Image 1 (spheres, one colour):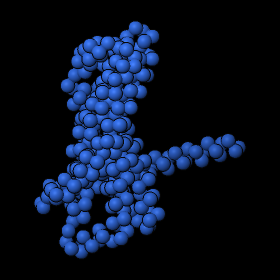
Image 2 (cartoon, helix red, strand yellow):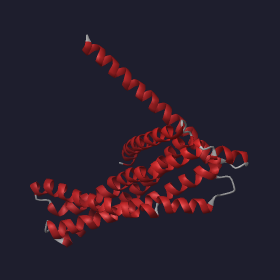
Image 3 (tube, rainbow, N blue to C red):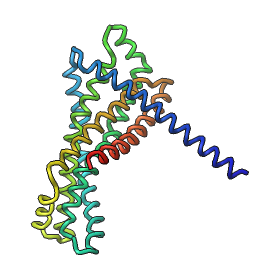
Image 4 (tube, rainbow, N blue to C red):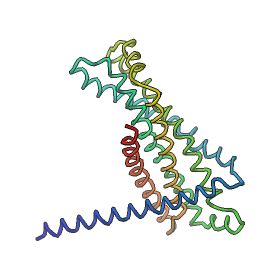
Length: 262
């Protein structure tokens, strides 16, 4: 009897979580419509957009370079372990390049930026909401979505493809060093396999994914921060939910886009 009750409560809990997730996605989509409405209306906050580009893009480069380099190294080690069993060590570079360009680059860049940028966006906007700074903008006839949200979403959508490309490039440098210097794979065979198997469409797909992930993570972060309440505790809860929801949506949208582009 206890087992049956446990199963029932677990099913109910899962259904409640799914319902809450779908409700959150619906509200985020409505917020997206509001963003699109204000994004095409003047005045355009160019200076604020550049400031957000610096925060999202320039200040994330070191993190992305380090993460990409170690990801490339680990990918080579794991790929070599599998391919050496079939005498295909020379294809390690091509396999790593494809993984970095199409999947690892955009996805891991998105997750890193969620942790660094998305959480900061939510906390900043949540603090502004709780200290009534957003209400002050309304009292001065300034649209808060246009002034606070649009520059952040535009900047993240622009910066993410560049960060993903930097991630993939750093990963390939790490993969090359690990392959040639540590595993003693011929450098010519490594580069030849990369040129033969990696096409421009692979790179394009990764950049498209990265732009979509930038839109998703900034949209969720701004939505959660914009609607945060309950003081400091509410800001903390909103930030946590923002990171979780952004990460889930990035992984889910990655599957959808991969299935469409496959």
